[in-house]
Length: 148
Image 1: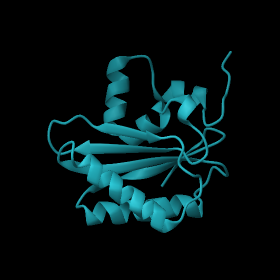
Image 2: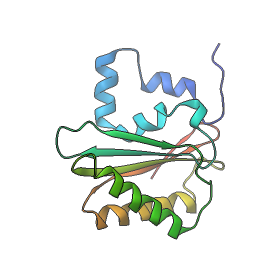
Image 3: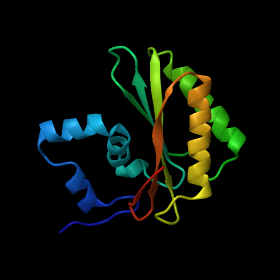
Image 4: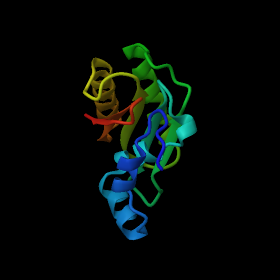
């Protein structure tokens, strides 16, 4: 029997990520942001929790940063400052290529204004730092994946 916990949909997870390593790795390469959304530890999934995916231009492996205690609602300026700081810190690890974001929230399984604002601010941050915009996913309390 499969149980559901907040911010989780184990049936969808099993469908997306089969136990076959070759298939799972190929899917992760095709859709790194979905991989991140599905692989944030359950203990770190709560309203406001953020996961940042970073890709690099050289052989540096991609990075995942999880901030489980971020506030669910914050101002646009706070989001802009946060993402700018993330880009600067990650660039110390290697030549940064792109950024993606997964945020956890309450609410509907459709795009909200908060989702759209995260997307706009991530796009602005990527433009300012000459990075690829990988995308934004909202993960809802029900476990739904809302892709922008």
